[in-house]
Length: 320
Ligand code: R5P
Image (cartoon, rainbow, N blue to C red):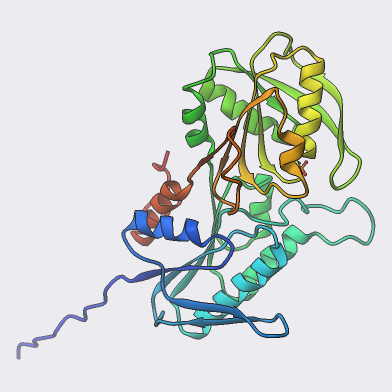
């Protein structure tokens, strides 16, 4: 007897939800992918607690939650956790946290006794609420991936920023790492820009203040590009600018950093005559639009490229 079985039609479905940390970026990513973000209500109860409601079904869907852990990091973290919990309880098939800026990543070790390791704690809570996969950009240090047991894909903005910079910077530009931690990033930029590397040794004196104690490399009379993963208070850059000018660098500095947090008076510290261009991406929302040297390159096409590949179960290896 012949059996006529009707094949089950199981459409491959995915949905992108935006948290409140950077909805513009989520919309731009979704537009690149060819969809609009899913409907989701995010509010605060009168006592400040987070209230989330997904306004559409996620049953057996692949879900992407776009939420950088930018300031206020605690608010944005709890929101991301709540969104993931809502998705898990509503039977999402797979939850990917798209965290373009992973807050607390600088807390990756204990500096003294009785301190937490917040980077590890964040990894633990993301996993605890059922997130299956993390997609992020330019982690503070790559070892942070090791805090997670779930897959972490770390994209980098360096190729995009370097392509943009290559229009202005001469070959032989000195790419300056403002501290030893930025050396790998500086080497990558130098490779792409046909430049050389210099490194500063930084001593952190407080949360906002740093001091440069040594410079390794020749910057006298040279065009310099300072690179870092993030600009937070601007203290690191202010010290680097001062040290480079003191060492005779040409007073036409360029700065490139992936994450522009720009908190606690960063703009005032960096806005100096010698700083001609500052390049950041839009991983963090709210960069000032009225600051002529500041240029913002969108990371949306890169993240969207990754999302498309993830949905199609393809490698991210050909993204760059
Ligand atoms: C430190 O290791 C980071 O890479 C950055 O250099 C630093 O966190 C930037 O912070 P701020 O702008 O407050 O100096």
